[in-house]
Image (cartoon, rainbow, N blue to C red; front, side, top):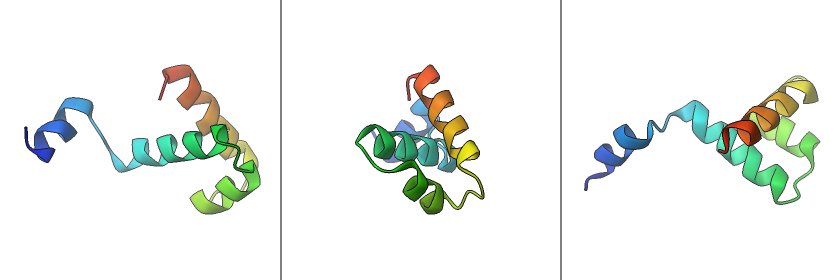
Length: 59
């Protein structure tokens, strides 16, 4: 199976990669403020929303 086939199968996008990275970082114990800065969010609220959505979707 080629990489391109995997991307199509799992619908991996830049956006979903950001969500997954942020969720993994926070669940591994990273400070939410540090993740906010890494993502370039202006508010921790935006980062909270990503975390909640990712956890609800099982990402």
